[in-house]
Amino acid sequence: MNAVRATRIRLPLAPPADVRRERTAVLAVFTAILLLQLELVFNRPINWDEFWHLSLVHTQDQGRMTEVLQVLHIRALGWIAALPLDEIGQIRVARLVMFCCEAFTLCAIYGLARLFAQARIALLAPLLYLSAGNVFQHGMSFRADPLVTALLMAALWLLAASRLNARALAGMAVLLALAMFATIKAALYAPAFAMLAWHRIRQSDRPGNLTLQLAAMAALAAALLAALIAASQAYVPPTLTGGAADTVKTSRDMLLAEGLFPRWPYIVLTIGTAPIFAVALAAALPALRRGGLVSSRRLALAGLILPLLSVAFYRNAFPYYYAFILAPVAVGMVPGIAWLARRYSARTVAFGCLIGCVILSAITPRGVQDDQRAVLREVHRLFPRPVGYFDFAGMVSAFPKANVFMSTWGQTRYRKGETESYAQAIVRRDVPLLLTNNNVLMRNQSDAGPAWELLPADAALLRTAYLQHWGPIWIAGRRFGPGSAAQDFVLPSAGPYRLQGAAAEIDGRRIEPGSTVNLGRGQHRFVPLGPGETELRWESNLPRPMAPAPVDAPFKDF
Image 1 (cartoon, one colour):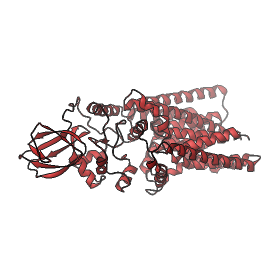
Image 2 (cartoon, helix red, strand yellow):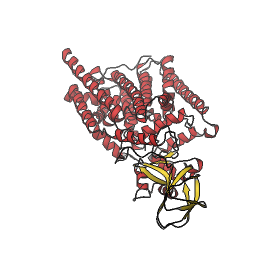
Image 3 (cartoon, one colour):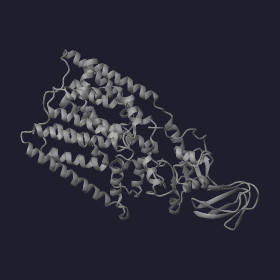
Image 4 (cartoon, rainbow, N blue to C red):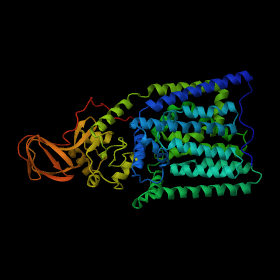
């Protein structure tokens, strides 16, 4: 069966020499923007969920992985844990892999757009996508999104451009199964696949047969997905095989969990940092209603735009989401791209994209990675071997994180009691390290605390059971102010503790200032033996900090 073929959207005729110069200019801009983005691979601040994904890579490497779904990128990049690089170096390598995935997506966008428009217009589609602010900043980030976008765009390309023989249909089934296995939000591309399939059926000389073949392909994709889930569960401890069902429930709850347009400020940010993309999209909508296109082609293009409506209800429509959801939109809006190119010329559109990316690159902070590396260097110097720790997003990737990933959704589940509390965590294991690397933890440990986002018992535990060592690094310990009464207290980690200040009786034993006492994790009894302050600090031989601590938190907003 023939691929999508019909009269393409075209620009007015121009001399061949002018067309060649135009193509050269557009390709030069494309190359420049790719190089600007490649520099960001190495120097853009590392986002907290990139650290989280790297921690999952190390969790898998250590045989502690409990997730079944939505970890395809983790399993595919498991080899990164063996690289002799620090966390930032490993994330840079992962970003390079995602940069390659994005490069394939750009090819797929062009290939799809070429089916609906001439090359002069089609070449602008991936350019507008790449230069859209959030895509330029996050299209190469270490997340599942670049990988799943490449898989889905490859499947759409096959659906639109292939003859839909058995090999092409089988390839589509594999791509769709892998995409759904990588992230359940791949289902948000459904309108694009449905409308493009409808167009192929309408253009087919045997629509009944093609309908059955596409249905069989969908069934095969579902079967392959089930097989992938079953194979993954075989590697998960039997007590944790409910993980897939939990992931599906969580993904379902992401829809309409916070009403309509839950992330509307980021929609405004997306439009503001991608004005040319936004204008092209706005121009495409009336063009799709007008004549000049076969009705099924108009439906196909509209279907490629429809996934964007998910920003109205998807609670995780953060900036990185747009690198995922705008890829098919860049193809669907080719009528608007043609309008822009006719009105302003393709070269003007291309140079406008370049100016936007130069500005975005210039305002990207370059010093955040230095602060992040300083924190990690100090943690590894203090703790040569992995220890349990509390933090925001698993910043120390090879160490076992003891609390929930403190994303907005993770915090919601935590406050509902669906995940382990901090107090429960220290019953299970030693947690000598607290890393205050987000606003909630910083505020809880400051004079402005406790943080309302934490359960009262957990907030009190963190405030009383840890002592600040250096910047965001807090060590297990307890400070008893002058005049403190006898009291019970909790330590989050077993080990040697040095007593400083006034002498005290700990669990019935007199401890002199400067002495070290081995104490277990959990509850102890303190009785003061003098009027002054008494301090117990874990591991008295910890080295002194080598440099001043960073002033800011080691993360910036998206």
